[in-house]
Structures are given as structure tokens and as C-alpha cells.
Image (tube, rainbow, N blue to C red; front, side, top):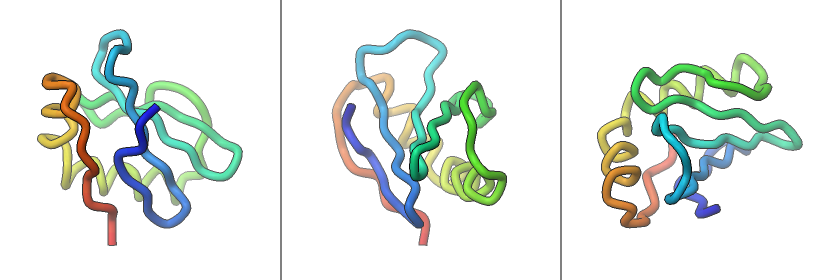
Length: 82
């Protein structure tokens, strides 16, 4: 699964041939979660609330880029949250 961004110990990945709805995966330490790209909503898994807020802040900045990755399947890195 390609890593598309990494910040503050959070790793964002995406499978490019995965099922709908469009979503991305998040890993933090030994925890994993999935977030919907249409709404920016938590789908499943577990993530500390601080890290979930960071992921959602990153999502708000890059949601158009994320949807472009999902739709085109053209891999590229997305800038981390700074």
C-alpha cells in the first residue's frame, strides 16, 4: 500500500484498486483507521483523538488532491501537515 504522506508519527496510505467509497488508511504506532474522502469522516478502526484531529486537519487541506489520487490512480506524495 503506497504511503502518500507522513507527519507527526502518522502514516497515510491508499490502495489504488480498493472498494468504494473513496477512503484512505491511517497508521499511528500499532493503531489503524480508515477515513472517508467524501466527508472526511472516520469509517473504522481506532486512533487517539489528537491524531484523528491532525488527520482531519490534513484532509481539509488536501481533500482535492486525495480525490484526484483516487480517481486517476496516479501515485504521488502529498505534503505533510507542518
